[in-house]
Image 1 (cartoon, rainbow, N blue to C red):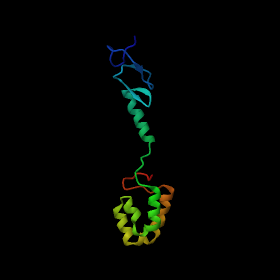
Image 2 (cartoon, one colour):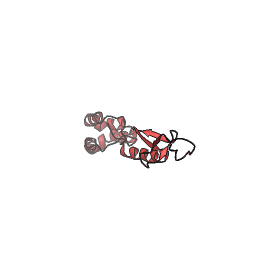
Image 3 (cartoon, rainbow, N blue to C red):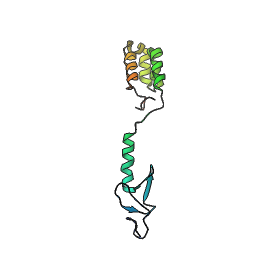
Amino acid sequence: MMKCKNHIDREATGGCITCGSLFCRECLVKLSGKYYCKAHVVNVLREEAANTALVGSKSRLLTFLLCLFLGIFGVHRFYLGKTGTGILYLLTAGLFGFGVTIDLIRIFIGNLKDVNGLELV
């Protein structure tokens, strides 16, 4: 009988895929069909979070169309939650058209983000 590394009075039910040590059911965490000890599951979750791009709920296509047709009024900026620059675009005709042109390019290449810094869908 193999014993848990953390609880010597308990039987081991499996091993951590990272360190190979044996643990009881209480000490193992199942993640994506693999078992990890509690010490290593944190590292796995951090790696997964770092590899996951945060994406917002605002549509890239809708933002592009709003900018193309109503950009001089700042409508696309209001849609993204950027009220301050929306008002600025409204008062300056989209920063005299230059701001709208730059925003169209930024939307097209995926560089413009919403007010929370999230990418457009």
